[in-house]
Figure 1 (cartoon, rainbow, N blue to C red):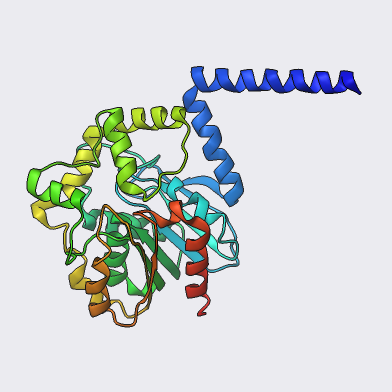
Figure 2 (figure 1 turned 90 degrees about the vertical axis):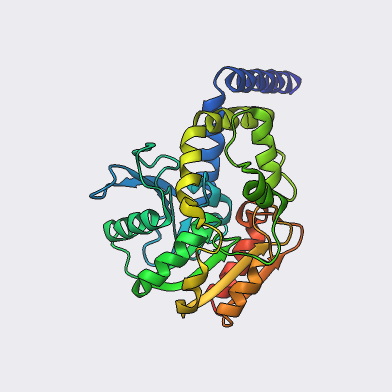
Length: 316
């Protein structure tokens, strides 16, 4: 028995050393392995589709074909991976999460492309057609919420319900410090060109940052730094002619379908007072505000977010 224990201990040490080498020498592989764990937990497959205008659109699909569809849109500089934790909790639905143009693995990614909201809406319409989706609940976080709202206005025939999560496009009564810096000092805190700027961006996104390993922060920050010019282009197009703030407001009254608004009370990116204007235009909307939560509730509070979504979807 003692010899077996000794062998087991040696194996554990060897595996730990191997893991350390993988992290140090192949950090990208280690990060990919963590993402793969999330994919397995969520039960999703990474798939792709081509459209007339886009050669490779990457998306997750749990392929539960006999269940209601939830189509999820991430925020600016985000990706479909933002939805993995909440997707793992939504077992009674077909979950599809797309990498929007200019993001994730959707190709091409070019400084010559159009990344305005109208371009995202047209892109989404092409993807919906290619996936043969006829009716679904549209879920959008941050910029993805702005795109979702405008898509629902333009193509209401597709929309069963809509879920906004800390969405962009509202000229809120109160402004966050990060937004005021952007408006008054022309400082875009979301385009990062150094490790310190990436860490600051994480602080903006979360009320309480998840305990990310240092190698994850280093690896992901390097990826964001490499994409800095593209990310600047994304923001420039989104706010072309200064139209990003308040861009969703003209379309809210037309959204007659069931609406859920979710917000993190401590959102440092888009102020929670945005809800006031949304409720004025959509008095039928259901609202849930999470205490001690930031800009991405589906990441910071995935279990609770999934429960609020499920209650809404099931009419509870």
